[in-house]
Image 1 (cartoon, rainbow, N blue to C red):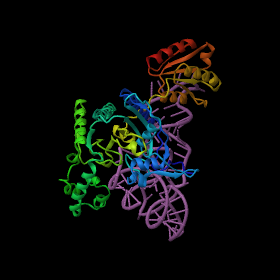
Image 2 (image 1 turned 180 degrees about the horizontal axis):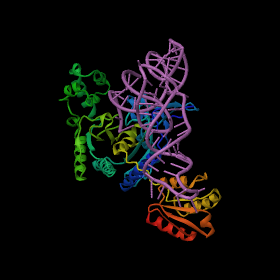
Image 3 (image 1 turned 120 degrees about the vertical axis):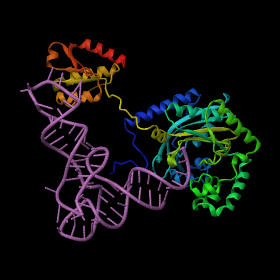
Image 4 (image 1 turned 30 degrees about the horizontal axis):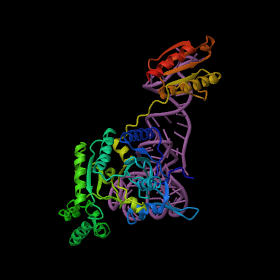
Length: 420
RNA sequence: GUGAGUGUAGCUCAGUUGGCAGAGCACCAGACUGUGGCUCUGGCUGUCGUGGGUUCAAUCCCCAUCACUCACCCCA
């Protein structure tokens, strides 16, 4: 029996776990301010959902999903991303019909069977949001403004927003054809990987990091020049709205996304110099996904996801262990353990973080423990005090101890708690 | 899936051209026997990742295997 976690999965322990909770709380607060409400979907979905939504030929679907046959013979998959489930749930329940655009956010684990490395786990976590029911450029700008504000307030510096438009089914095929043709002419100048990529996903060649490919594609046709009228207008309006909102950004016509469902606006928040895992959050518009999943009508939508592990990594350590206790009970002998336990439960009920040692250790040991716990006050329960109907009240910060009646000690403690 | 590196005490890591396995931190106990933080003294803790092989002898050399880390691929 090994106690180790499954490869690519991690136990998140205190004090690290506290960073997670506070980041999640901050995300919730931001999301609620923008009018998003939480949705919780199952971790397990029919395999078909992801195959259709994410794209049959994507790496995620082809080789990274945790897929299995359940006891009834159905093929199920542990979710590799969040959007597909949220769209399914939206179509199934139509929450907020008639109230205008519907805004939903989620927080939770995703699973992809990849080789783990820095900033990439098999179980990783995303905080994401989806905005349904409008293709207004303001919606695009809103989601990016939301992200920009959240990342900034989280304390993340040096992050930049890159935006692109992938066009729609009307204009993208034409661009793809042009690009394929262009790449075919330069086949010899491309790296081995890209020569393979050329056929399957020509856009990806533009994203290659190898020197030769960057040189070979320097004057490749830009998708932004190939957009149809409506897509071009939409993109221009998104850029305008971003500027209005005061969100800095730059165009990146070479940006590629790994999921097939994106169309028109796509964007990434990247940290320069972070290596291959430099994307901390990304998203885009997916106006055709609802229909692809069998929805009766077109539901324009846009969304994004933040990589929690990556964000926490970028925010740095800073995990300070908060004090474990406000007050610690010390006994001079095991005979006072019941009395101390009564104090402890009473104090916890009144809102204190109270702790004590159950093992009957030496006082030295108990005090050491009290010190480590961060307790500001120690209550000493012992023979001498008890004889006079009192307790010892020790101010740990000042090292001053007094003998006072029990009720007086309680009153003082309440004062300490109020001060925080 | 491909490549490289690492695996020794709870934690961080030394180590031996192959010869009874170490330090710091942490923990426990004590320093005029009811009191923390500093100092000092003493103590506890190891399948040296796992399984084979070579050898009088392997933590060290060889093979395999597993795990972790980093990079590639790809992505949040």
